[in-house]
Length: 498
Ligand code: ZN
Image (cartoon, rainbow, N blue to C red; front, side):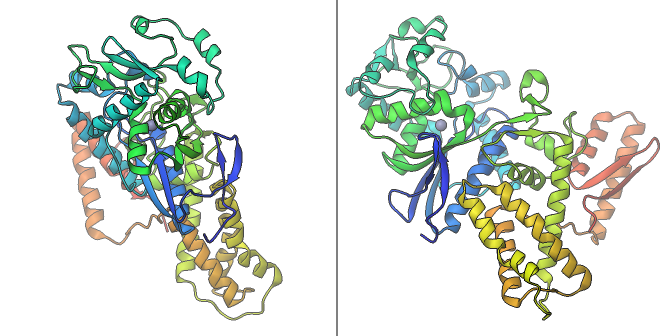
């Protein structure tokens, strides 16, 4: 490959390693996708963007990547446990919908949000409910190897039996004795030989909506088995990269390893990559804390914690300004800074795109600054995808571009250094970081008339105290322009002044 020094931090070995795929130039990569029972939120954006960067960078290095990101549409029970209602089944029951209507609705919403964030779709997006046969086959193999047992129509993974030959806890570093001591005995766990055994297949209670026939009776798969079965189907028994949020490390990914080894005897994944979590104003995001921000709410500014709407590119840029293994704290201040930062780099991009090189005497310092840009960015990406450092180099170099633009001359730089810098800056901005300049067409009369008309309708609605309508119009307009309300009038401006 074009670059052999690309390093990633491997959660399994707890160190940075030079990436070497099993079968170059092919790379198999799996990301745990969303459980589609609600709107996509900030927590969904981070793994999607992190692994989009990895997907883009691997392709940039010349690899042929098969990127699998699943849709969880069955088996994910409340509280991520082995008991309780299926998250999608519950939503379907409450809203009197067919479960697959729930799945379709939220999958389409997720895709719409991911498109807005410029996240490239995966190569394959398998649904858990479409792979029940593969999951049953895998469970049969695990039972045949003695690492699972049937109990009252359900099948559980037998941690004690597995421990005799393998190491449960190798990824998370957890010790099984500690896990047993920390597990409360709940109703229904009497089916298990050990309280830390986890479900591979669950017998369906009569009221359970989603169920399939199996050798153990009518039931449904456990949450963890889908990723083992689908990654094996599309990427093989051992593949290169498995990603996900740190919150999935235990038990989900630990269980995936145990299931795959229990079925094939082989370590399923060479490199485990995990992105860190995010907080809102210093607090963990949670429905009970009223700080749970959906992506649509962020993009329209309709959540009460938000001072304004933030564009999808602002969110993407904000996330890339932190290394993926660091936590991110979201605040209005942080997002507004990201908005300004992105505007600055967008301007640099647009200035560079149209700039003409002019011959001037070369200044050694400027020449060095611009000719070293590409290597500095590449070094940062090769050091465990450090997008934060890449962005800092972009900011540093943008001062030169501003100067060139102001004077109308590319003063102090040779044509070779200027052209290689321009090419690298544009490549990093669009292809590798996946950013899009947010140019607004400010000369569009139709657009301005439409905004003015909608503001008139909204003013009338407010006068008639129809606040539902006036809020709806405000939310729509906020996606495109900045509204400023006073007691009697509303003025507006384009989102970004050029
Ligand atoms: Zn998974």
